[in-house]
Every structure is written in C-alpha cells, then in structure tokens.
Amino acid sequence: MDAWAIRLAACAVAVAACVPAAGARADTIETGYLFASDYGRSELDRFQYTYNRTSHQMLGITPYGAGGSTSSAYFLGGGQFPIKEGLQGTGNDLIIVGGTHGSSVTTFSRYTLEGAFLGQVPVDFSGYNNGNVGIGNVVATPDGRYIYAPLEGAGYVVKIDLSNGAIVGRAQLANAHDVALAADGTVYAANYNNAAAKLVALNANLDAGSMVVLTSANPSGVAGSFRPSGISVASDG
Image 1 (cartoon, helix red, strand yellow):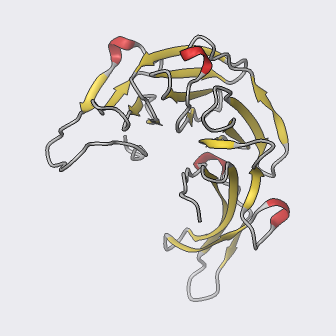
Image 2 (cartoon, one colour; image 1 turned 30 degrees about the horizontal axis):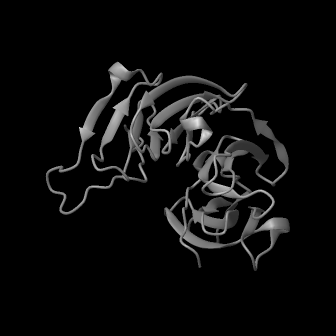
C-alpha cells in the first residue's frame, strides 16, 4: 500500500445506525465513514467504521468504496481528477483539494458524503507564487463558511471564504504545511519542511501581529530535527 496521508474528516462522519448491542447493557453502536486521501494514488478512499460509543471501543474498520464496495476502498479521484492531501468535512459534505502533483493547478471541490459533485470553489491563487501554491492539510470552520489553507509553495497561510472563493486573511509562514483550528478560533500552523521549523498560533483573521511562536527548531525535550506536522487540538483547547 502506498504511503498514506490520512486525514479524518471528523465533521463529515455520517452516523448510519445506532442500535442496542446484545448483553447486560444496552451499548450504543455507531456506524459511520472514515475518509482518507491517498497521496500516492491521487485518490480519496472511504472506509466504514463501527464504534461502541458506550465503551469507547473501535470495533472494526473495513473498505467501503465507490458503490459501497467492500473489497476496494477507492471512492473518488485518480487520473481524471487527481486528489492531493488536503481534505476536510463539514456537516454534510466533503471539501477536497485536487490537482496534479507538482503542478501549479490547485482546485477546491465539494462533494456530498455519497460522492456526488457539488461544484468547485473558484479561488484565485495567481498572486501567490504565480499560483504554484502547494496546498498542504486544510481545516474548515465548524459552520463550513471558511477554510484555512497552508500554501507551502508560496509561504503563506490563508483564510478562504468558501461562499465565493475570496481570500479574506493571510499570514506569512515559510513552507507552511499543516493547520489546526481550536474551538475559540485560534489557528495553529506548522512548517515542518523548513530549516527554521516552528509551530505558531494566530487569531482567526490571521493578523500578522497576532502570531505567537509556540515552539521552534530546538524545543526542550526534542532530540534530533524538529519537524512539526499533523496538528490536532484537544477539545478543551
């Protein structure tokens, strides 16, 4: 299997069924979807998971690809619409970063959880490294209105209005690749592929003056090269 760039579309989980389990207690069993972008194959895969919400145990994850296939996880993408690693979910759809790897062409497309195409978000990146932006891992606001995108090739983190594709905020961060969003609106960003790698915090508008460096190239307790990526924020902030 190719190297995975797995991103859980947490807000896009579809709860298919909650039924009592057999036994002494009525456990709540939840079935839903896990979406994973496969950077090597340029495709989006889908898996079905079963979770015991009562005991907090994952009971199983199986392929659940196009048409409900249980033998292949392939769901979208490939040669006709190559998918990069950026992937996010809102309450009822998927926001996917697409475009041929290594090219300057990058698109934001929206799909239903069932795979129906909803349309593209017309974002103009021409003012950022002539459009060769190299989008990393994106994150959407809970209301689905905005998305934060790290432009590794251009050295920026930008805030995009998904209703019209307008870039409404930006902050410079060389080789920015990963972002995360806290419940209070704080944006965290990291640039693991930079000689001066760091993890920073910004306000929701990405105002330059709000940037706080949380940790940098030689943080205490970290041996070897510091390369922060794959950020997640605890529910309590």
